[in-house]
Length: 205
Image (tube, rainbow, N blue to C red):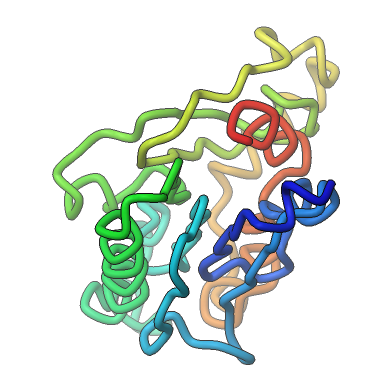
């Protein structure tokens, strides 16, 4: 749509661009600000940004890392390092808010230490299965936006009882040291679920 071409959406720390994909497909001017091409820490936003999607890395903020506090094979949590991209996202959001055109913004992270830092609860909490994805991962969205509508209220509407239990067991399972230190499964699980991305887009246009 020609009208959408004038609406700038910033996808901060967006990785594959999964969260902003519905906006890109609808013709919005999506700017993917993510490593290695662009670092949020030195990014200067353009004028008249319409919406911001931010997903700073969560590996140092997740509560799951507490399981390794006494493991000499896993580097200790680096909270200062974790806050560098978070602070950059907040700075960009603040700059765009001052311009007066920003219609919505959201910052995504698994439920963990980010709430302690922001001193606020997430505006929206969901599992991927709420939007049709057959796995669990409790995730919070902080910000100013219209709440997306959950598609499913019962986990068994999305996956069998056996699959649901297996997914819960995977959350409780201690990932290997290599998964913690090199990404692996964590990187795959960090991709924004497409069902949620579409629901968020439908609520925020």
